[in-house]
Length: 548
Image (cartoon, rainbow, N blue to C red; front, side, top):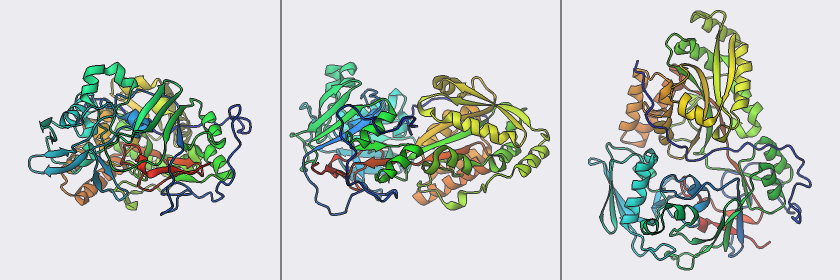
């Protein structure tokens, strides 16, 4: 057995699912002077899979109008360091090297073309000529080299695959070199937003944090921290398309109950990720939800800490007894999330290419069998342990998971003490194995369409969670096969084999539930099935609004 140590803690790119505290009646919750709930909303309550709730393929796209989005807060825009906020609010102004169609094919954007040399482990990017930033700066290879290099040195290198070198070989060519072959080269590089090196050198980081300078079809008009961010159409846009919407605005509404009320009052165009209570309320009012891309979503999990070889959880048989028979996972998902949560026995979301139904192996709890397996492992009277969880941020909802797991494990004689922790302490100390050598902890990971990204960041031998587990020789062997795969088919098979070993055999990872991201759009707001650009925001050309 190989006991691996944690090296780098990598920031999550997306905070994930917001838990709405709907404690107020929505009648009368709107702001003073707001309008009533729009009439003519849809009566079909089924969740749509593609496009807005009232999108019709081939419908005429009207020009003009405003799209109003809502956020709880702005977190700064210097995305070469961390693309998190840019993914959420900067996509009208910033552009990526490439964009991904609904069928997963990458198309040129700021990179006109690219070549992959599988033997030299290089990606050669040919940069589009004639592109300028909104302030007049010329976009060329130096901006690509600089943007990617900042990402590579700041601590988010794994988001672009941790290249060993990034070099502009002329004004419009950049060569990115990796230490080994991967099927994910394009998935790492093409979704990255590009920034002006000249602007940063001239203005400095503090200015860039509050001023978005991009190449996109919209430019920033006004940014008032803690209030709003507004974009208007950029007349100098380099492309030959004309965007439909006149203005994109983000309003800051910290209180999530007020967000729902504002949506129902017609003040905002789009509402993302309501919980089960809000979802049912909106559907009862005639709104039709749209489920976000199947390849993305949040998965909460429990990880047993196996560093103390004398603890019960260090025994594989104990972990198997708890996960396979000791907790009613499906009931937990249903109880905590209603129709918005679902349990799966796979690492990640079910939309990932490697996923097949044969990965599912738990069939509901069998408390008697769990007790027998614990007795066979040497614990006929059960044992006591601790369950650590974060109290905010991306760990919102962990307290409910902890309480549910505590009640379930009591049924098989396992006494659990739930220990709440500050999220920073949980991440920097407990997830690194610095404090607790046994017990369990609750985490949450937001998965993107790049199916190996979170595995490498979080659960590889050098990932975040390796600090609390023992990586078996077999698991390490299977992990290495994932990276060595030369075809998507081989990678999918290696991932399935790894997940079986990780979840079912070694039982070092216990998926709790996945969250579906459901979005609601006003009846006058439309977007096509091609609106999303991979995991980097939306395509503003694929969004339009009706007059209302």
